[in-house]
Length: 68
Image (cartoon, rainbow, N blue to C red; front, top):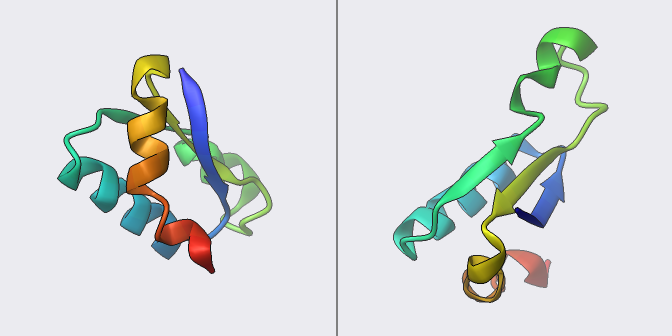
């Protein structure tokens, strides 16, 4: 799997998940449950992963998210 986004921002992550879902791209959120260990302080970024063959499509789907 390839990483297409790394963020501590839960809103940005949720929006990225929405964009990938709309594009029909399967994804996996790595480190989603690390908050149980870190105490919800947001120190560890969550990583949005896609299959290697879908990385180009995922990058295109997330292009507007990366403009900020």
